[in-house]
Image (cartoon, rainbow, N blue to C red):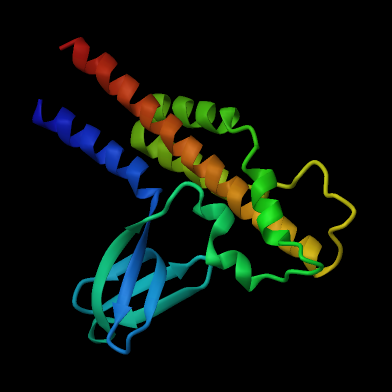
Amino acid sequence: MFIRYTFLLFLFSIIISQNSIDVLSLNNGDLIKGQIIENSINNYVRVELMGGSIITYQYSEIKNITKEQIPIESSENSSQTNQFSIKNNQNCYGDGVKTASNIDTNSAVLGGFVSGFGLGLIGMGISYAIVSLGNPHPDYIPGEYEGDCRNDYLRGYRKEALSKKRTSNLLGGAMGVLTIVLVYSSQY
């Protein structure tokens, strides 16, 4: 019984973690926001920033580490959109994000469910990795997006589409694993 609840708590934490970001407060006053990908306790922390860069900080440089919740609508209004070009009052990156927010994620949920049901957590991880390697591309790019603006539009689309597909895949995988756990536990 204890193992079942621990497992469910683990799955829930995986799903919840997709809506938060790690925040490192440095001794020099800087705030670093990203995803901690490696934490060598009392040694160093490796952080993947929003743009994909990876930076390593020694523990002696870090004041504290916290988590910050990301509001659902933040992907459209985040300050990250400001780092990309805005021409003729266009937010090309933000427009790409808005376009991707309407993509169909049913196949990602189904793939996650089947993988989680069939291979458990390992299948869930494999399915997530496969989805993460994807390179989503919009079906149509309006003609007003040219040059750097087009590149920013595609970057915004890809980032949002991958994020939605990863989250949907994890949700499907968690449902698949939970289903198989419940099926097996009901037999005993």
